[in-house]
Image 1 (cartoon, rainbow, N blue to C red):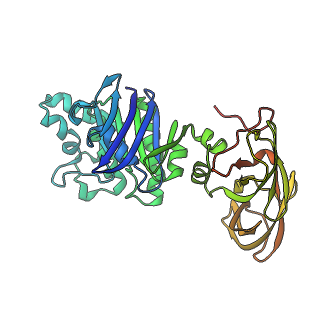
Image 2 (cartoon, rainbow, N blue to C red; image 1 turned 180 degrees about the horizontal axis):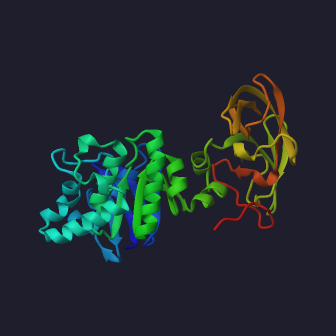
Image 3 (cartoon, rainbow, N blue to C red; image 1 turned 180 degrees about the vertical axis):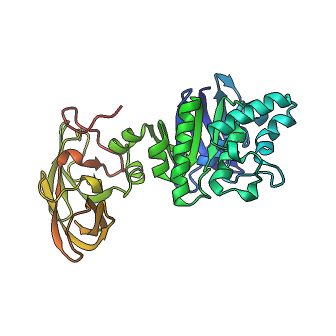
Length: 370
């Protein structure tokens, strides 16, 4: 296990900067997920830690040692890629032990390490098979096993589940989470899937356009997003955003008027807010009720999507198309209905005209997170 630290890390390709002065401290033994949309720089940042991309500026430290100019092979890391990269002519056992053989490790030591990794990943019955005779999930487990036998200080995963179908992705998510608990190793995992990030991570790093938007635990990012981007990216379905004006602000509340004239008083610290300025009110679909609340907004339902355990209502609300409400699977609302959607003020988020969140007022009752 080892901690990882990036200090003002910058990556340029020619005159174009793709990573902009990233500072990160990742603790030993944590499962960290880099998440963000395509092109945000998450894989590039991972490759900079691995030594596969040279830093243009800044430093990378692994285990309190400066690894900025150290070759990838000497950094004490093991990387699992989206592509399994298995040798088709080798068996599972040979694939898993190949790197050790190339480094001249004793064959008995290799056998012990491979058998231990195979047991951990439930691959004992597959050691004599070749990749063509295995499923995608089994191949990915072999690729992970190849990393385990190296006893690295840090595991790096670059979108390892992208090639798997939905059911296998769920299964492999669970296996990787269990593996982390068994090994207690530092793991850094890249994905564009925020569900993977929320279900696997101890700490999530949200990236956009080569910059870190927010770092925190999954529940911290869910309940306390610092800006509109994080609020909209974390959570499925995504948060609803209604626009309006700030009528009045203080250290304990923001009185807002939505575009349809609805007034609401939200317990946030809006002492620095400017009356008359534009605001965005964020409400998660799962926080919307149908019987009671501090205020209500009218919704015209276009589609009712019934999934058994849950029902999703899609429609127009306060000028917003594609407004989403999540209800129980027994909800009887029909497409074409006009309904009132009830909102609890403590479930609302308020963002200023720059897209930054007003902090929750000290006395407010929003859920606390570790």
